[in-house]
Amino acid sequence: MIRARVGIVSWNTAPLLERCLAALPDALGDLDASVLVVDNASSDDSAAAADRSRVAAVVRNRENVGYSRAMNQALACDDADVLVALNPDTE
Image (cartoon, rainbow, N blue to C red; front, side, top):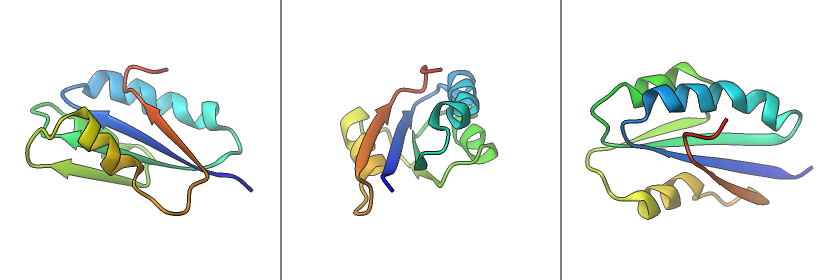
């Protein structure tokens, strides 16, 4: 079976992130996927929104390390066959 890792970087996108994470289960269907959210030192409720959903993990950066570095954090794994970089405004 193919394993996928879905990485999402959030910076002050709590409302968008909530909708994105709510839509993911239907979008992923039966795919064996893990979702990891990296919060880039948001000042809103982004990390808590990720905590409330069924994600594999939430990484909380103490400072905004930029999109590329944060996405590298999200997609760093050694067991996924497919890596998906997803923006939090995706439904």
